Image (cartoon, rainbow, N blue to C red; front, side, top):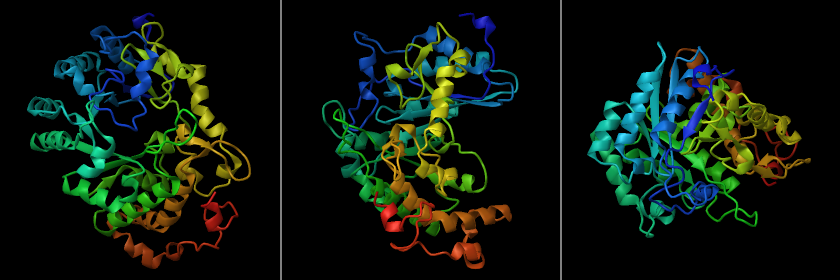
Length: 424
């Protein structure tokens, strides 16, 4: 591969970087990434070398279209703090070395928080890293699935790490994996995160299969997911709009206003958020780190060649092209676009086997939140803040619509009764 011949990609793209692969100091029972070490049998060190780091950084920056003025480096794992601070000091040096004129580079860093100390906090503050810290709720809930390699709960270490971020004035958000346990306690989870000092929440539904193709016991249920989102939404809109920011709600409000989804899960197509393993191997997505989704290695092919290649383009378009008829007729298609392809394995009413497992939950939430998002959109168009939504709930007749009754037609447009549509 000729580094001097790097060309720009056709479209902007993002890479989730796994600089220590799947190596982690926790053994969370629902983690989908821990078994990715099996892709590299016999490998003892999963530490990204300086050569790979340099090669990747140069390519990632130089292959972005000229229109890109801000580029994000997203560090994940495994647990990236296991690499030590010096690795990321070097990463920042390479970023500054290859940064194009007029381009701003930012770093996001997803961590379980257990190894954070004052030195990490000062580094993150100095280099303006945005930290995502994984926490699933109060101690008894968090520790149920998030334990260390010896089976000990990780909650106390996570809270200590979170307090480091607060003390050192590091910008952070929380990432809560919604599972079969905390999925039944949305208000408790919301209050806990708020009281812990977080102002930006990410809720990620866990949907994993066992080796026999059954759904894992840790996975959140479809209706459970819909109830979780709806109850969190009700608590948020009551008093915290403009104070607490929730990723899904920000995305959906933007979609109601005609914007494109900033979250790949609800975008029309995939393929612009690939995953880089520790040795430079590139995969279609961090939910598709499988042999069939291997695109190549950056020492042999450029990122641009792999991102613009037919295999990745086909992967991205499949999300749209394989939608079942049920989705194509749904009134909420523009909000959902079928959801994450990793979750699309359920049978759809009317035929098709590519329906999102969580579809009933999303349908419940969309029908529940519709009038409120419509009112919030009107506020923003009128130059008001979204928290003024009640003005338009009163004056906009279309926002007065009641939630459908069990025997009413489902708002998704399927033609089925609401109770039947949400019971499939």
